[in-house]
Each structure stands twice: as structure tokens, then as C-alpha cells.
Length: 273
Length: 329
Image (cartoon, rainbow over all chains, first blue to last red):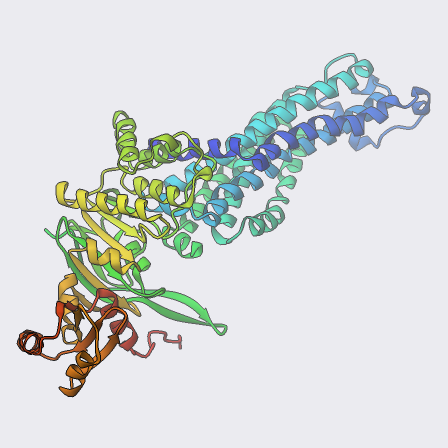
């Protein structure tokens, strides 16, 4: 693989993204929406409830208590309102982690099917760049906005959530070990899987619209990977998490092989015409 | 070593016809031998296989049968090397509209591994060559169709390729821009010994530029030769025009009484067009007689069949049944 060609393609894609209002609004707008709207619409109403309404003998089921007691300090000593806020914050954090799935659906569709639709792909295919280099470059250029968007959203979500939750628990909730692992390790890996799936779909379809429609159906089940990862961490701690990461690495490698096998110069040209 | 050489080059596409899978033969047994620094034009109607041929030769498509070599490199076994030594202007010269002309050209130069220090001077050279200096930092999307075409041609030459395939190079250009492109093709071919393979509908262009012309129909090469050789195929259809200083019926009667095959009488232009079977033998005789009769003839002109006429007759008379499609059993 020649890095110069890969980087040329990545740089070109990123320049195009920054000049596309549609892609730019998806990369910046959606993360901001997730960062602000989610905590404000879910945590703020709970924080505004009169604490008296939480008084009583009600408790969460024991499995929820066990789940959070293992990762939140002094969980048992917190009142019901604080526990509800923490639980909602973690649930909503899962929503933020959907960004590594959603953003590649936009960027990968744009960068492969968009090139086919606008017929700019032919000039790339006519050059000496290999199919593997094209797929690799497209993965990187689709991933960078996804990392960027997830980072913006997670940072925004963390700040707003901490502002809302701190008065109730007397400490900052995020970033904790779990959120850092998910933003810095799980999120990017989910993103890579999402991009690879989108690239496989993009090589098969003719229009960006088809790519969005099929892609959103195919990548949505990835949310279960996030939930499974999070729950496995709660229940079984780091060993399971490392196992989960190893499984995802295997999935990434297999999907990369599949994507490079599916992406074929000749078929790409024929599909364009 | 030949610049372009094909042997029985054939390309089949899988298509769906009436719900069944079928083969469409786009290129059918093409044999070409193009020397270095030639300008070879492939003429043919839409769907005749011109674009598929240039894609096969540029190493993007793989032949179904037969093969091709570009400067000795096999288009299948050495496809990557072939792609690095050929330039290809595609049928749709799509540029990245949001990027500037410079960014478009730099991107492609990097894909072709043009040495970094050579990219800037090369871009400037091409920009000057195609008369685009004031457009270099404008987004490609803001350019006119003709300008974009010129940028796309420059893009196909960014890596200094010795063999260049141009699909309809002047299709969307204004006459003055088309002339700039034609002049550059001639210059690059003559001075820098580059080989050009043009796919075109523009018969005037093919006639003026090409060292040789191939006519393709239904994927088959139906005729090939220099423009003169092709015109000579219809040599016996040359018409002779006689022009007179004064027009009168005596002139008309002169030709009609001698049973010449009169094609057109134009009293306004004071001219008459006739068809003569043996031009060299009969023309001097007619001139002698006209002079003897004191008819005020002041111009005699032979109108040879144009390449357009030859092309149209060849393509229209090509009545091959389209039996290339074979349904899969």
C-alpha cells in the first residue's frame, strides 16, 4: 500500500466534507444536538422535580442496584433522585455512542456512492491506486469525521451532564473509566465496523439515497454491540471488555477483507454507466 | 515497440434482458496496431464500443477474450503500470466541484505519484497550455462546461503520460477553445512524440488531426486507414463543379445534350455539378469543349467525398444482425 495515494484520497475527501453544507451540518449539527438536547430533555426534568417526590421506601430492583453499585462510588448512599439521574445519564450516554454508527452512514455513503453518482470515481479508478488503497482511504476519510463528531458530542454531553448531576451527587460523573473506554476504544471500533458495512453497501448500490436507506437498516443492530459491551462491563468488568475488544478487532479485520474483495474496479465502472 | 496493440480484443457485459441474464458484446475482436506519436481516432455511433475500448486499453476493464498491450505492457498482467503510463479523459469529465482547479489537479497528481516538487510547475504548465491561468483557484463547479472540459483534459495529462486516451475531447468546447485543444494535441504528438487515441463523433476533428482513423460499429472495426485512404473508398463518388462568369441555357444544354450525369444546376451561383466516372480522363475533354464553345467557364473544382460521407455510408450500410447477445442456457 502506498500511503501517499491513500493520504491524497483522504485529504481530498476531507476537503470535500468541509465544503459540503450537508455533510458539515451532519458532522457538527448532530453531535451538538446530541450533546445539548439529550441531557437537557432527559436529565433536566428529573433534576427539576421536587426532591420530596422521591421520598419513600421505593428502591430500584436489586439487579439495577447491583449493576450500578459495581461502578458508581457510594451508590447505596445516594438518594433516589440522584440514583435516577445517574441511571438516566448512563442510558443517555448510550445514545451519544450511536454517533459512531450514524455519522459513517452519511460520510461513507457520500464518499463512495457520491463519487459514483457524480462520476468522479472514474478518474480515481483510471489511476494506479489499488482497490485496497481506495477502500482503506475511504475508511479513514469516513472515520475521521465520526471520531470528531463523537468527541464533540461526548465532551458536550459530559459537561452538561456534570453541571446537572453534580449538585445531587457531589462529584463529577463523567468522564469516568467506562465513558473513556467507550469514547476512546469502543466508539472508534464501532465506527470502523459501521464504515466497513457502509462501504460494502455503497459498492453495491447506485444512489446515495439507496445507500442511506439500506445502510441505516444494516448498521442499526450495531447499537446492540454498544449495549452488550456496556452491560458486560457492568457485570463482568475488564476481562470481558478486553474479550469484547478482541472480538471487535476480528470483526473489523474480516469486514475489511470482505470490503476489499467486494470493491472491484470493473464493477464500479460498470455500475457508474 | 507499438504504442497500442490489440489482438482479438473482446469485451462482454452481463446484462438483464426481459428478466433473463444475457451477454452483450460491446467490443468484438478488435485488432489494432498504433505506432508511437500517432493520433488515432476511433469513430463510431453511440453504443458502438468506443468508450469500452478506451477503458480496456487504459487498464480499467479486463478483456473477456483477447488482449492488449500499451508500450509493451499487458493491460491485464501489468494493469497498474499501464494505468500509470496512460492518461484518460473520460466520457463525462467529472471534476470535484467543491474543490478548486488546483486542488483537483494536485489530487490526481498525487494519485499518480508525480514527484512533489514537480506538481506545482506541471500544473502551471498545463494551465498555460490550455489557457486557464485565471481559473486556477476557482472552484471547479463555478466553471463553464467548456472550461471544465479543458481542466479534465489537463488532468488526464498531469502525470506526463506517453499515451493519452481522450473520449470526445472537444465535445463541449466553443470553437476557439476546441482549436486550442486540437493545436495542443498536434503539438504534443509532433514535438513530444506522444500517442493520442481519440474517441469521437467529430468527423471534422478526426479528419484534421488524425494520422489514422478506425471506424467501429457494433463493437467491430469495419474500416481503418488514413483519412485520405478512407476518403478514397468513395473516390468514384467525386463530383465536379463548373462555375461560369455568365449563366445561360446554352450551358445547361451543353451538359444535358452530352448525357452527363447532372447532380445540381444552380443558376444563382452560375454553377453546375456533374458526376464523372473517370475524372482524370474526362475533365480535360469537357474543359476543351467548353472553351471551344466559348462558354465563359472560370472555375473547375472536384468535390471529393468527405470523411463524414464515407463514415455515414459505412455505418449505415453496416447491416450486421445484432447477434452478439446470447441468452444463457
